[in-house]
Image 1 (cartoon, each protein chain N blue to C red):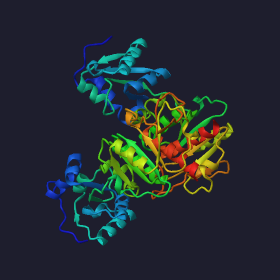
Image 2 (cartoon, each protein chain N blue to C red):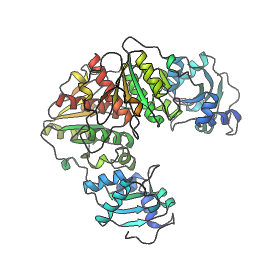
Image 3 (cartoon, one colour):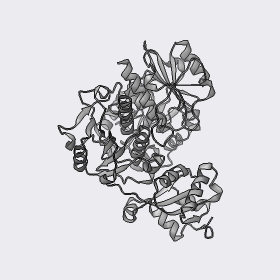
Length: 267
Length: 267
């Protein structure tokens, strides 16, 4: 390993700089975030993300995935710093650790960075607040072969470390963009992508709607539903049946039900 | 309120007894657990659960749901104790609070407590470890009108406060039982309920399987999949297509995809 001597001090300036990235303002000011976990890091490397720095605790590198991540980091010449287990625990975001934590540059997330296939299947999630929900939606969108996820007026930063973890790193394999709701609606319209919005009071069952062709599945926040901007004649509303006592599904579960019905209809 | 004077001490014995219920061993030894949140408490009251004690901080009771929960607690003669905000924060399990936290008796959870309709739709989840996943499955099972959820060889206690919260209290509206995997398989067979198990390598697509009639959707743990006991000629295996880079769905998302496909086919 091209390592300097191991850092054991929790007050080391580079350690402190990485720890500050737990704060959203710091992530937005620096354009950087934390990736923690071998699987997540491998998907970032597959995407060609720039690695600013990697902290490694060799004693904690125990899985083949973690070893592979270290080999890949070395191969791309990333700056690697050996740290003690307490220092790694301090910079790691999740509870578990594969012995490696990286500081990366946040990738571009503008709408015009998204390249679309012929019949795109897109997920739009409005006003998403919990990074864990965003990550869960990304994981399902990846599994369902979605073309992109658009966060409209999000209330979290997309590359929040908790979103990265909850996505299992698929945040690096599914194209993702952030935009205002009006810009999202215009972007879809300009590409003739039909928005189909989930609403609890829609008259049409989701399974009776046509979910083939260029399609965007649109989900509102659990607290507030969709904003008034989606009351638009170009938007089709559909309902997922609620047959029990609760009045809504978790937003990532609603996304899964709609995405897989689209996959079924399109296959 | 039939209150004694407000408790402000974090070392009050009743407060300490409630706090000890954060520990699984204590919950299992006492047969009690914590319900935190008005919506969750209202669903427990609807189920007729015995309330051992309720801690109330009047200054934090701000929603109509919380007021309704208090009225219902009074109406059923529950022992209610006024506490200061710091004491409530200490006994509350989640981050948020509706100003009321209750200690309840854990309801019975044996297989023979489950009453079934004519064409039951059941979810079996094996070796579930995260209470949040169990709660999420219960919330979706409620929404899809499932008849019951069976936790086979669970690695969490069913009425873990995090499961109660993640279920939004639907843990009290969906029948739930705990059993060994062999007992679960025999219970299903004795009732002619067809087990359909999700496996990543099954040749049959879930949407091409017949999901009508008496049915149990069977899900393994994310870490280990299903145990060998499910390699049984009476069990049909189905596959949810994985079209991206990740190799599995979250277990509660897989449950949702299968449950709603069953709902679609049965309607």
